[in-house]
Length: 290
Image: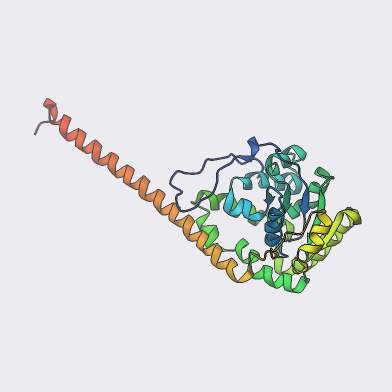
């Protein structure tokens, strides 16, 4: 569904540290310099950290929408609606609103719009992180595919502000990009996707990169010096993914419970106050005396 209305973060959401920025009111403040269009679970989180280390401010990642600024999901839904459902438009103006604070973008859901991003930012260098398709598929089944189908997240999304923005966007992305069945179509989509990007990006503007290669190829391609005495980052490993997601679910459920406590307490206080007022003033009215 295109253009869902923005709603502000509840003041009772004290167990999550999400920001609350309405990107539809934003614009580009820094030039887009890097489109890192490798699929998620190919080292994109490590690349994001590396690009930040190299001075790129900021690098967009799925975590930008999932755990940093959930209202971003509204614009991603607009983008999905425009591309896959024929509802509305999503061009350079909208990309600048959503990504205007970033000099780089990586991971999903951006990969669903590789062609559109390349057309919107032809001056940007293109990097594709990659890995063996079988190990990638196994890793993604245990992590993001699990998350896209996580019943606990779906449940929490019915009441929590952040989860309610993120879960529908993730589900939409997973369905349209992987044809509704990641286990069955994941490897085919992987191979087709990488072939498509290779076909539309000039070879001299494309780096296919494995994070195990370290700083050398990346810095050569970006024409920047290798950071001295700093190991290439390795983050967002498979083993900790599920634990982090479950911790996020718990924090969001605490938000829901706290909001219920505050609202319930407020209603109870109002009832008690009304009752006290009635007894205090009602007793003075002739018709209400015992």
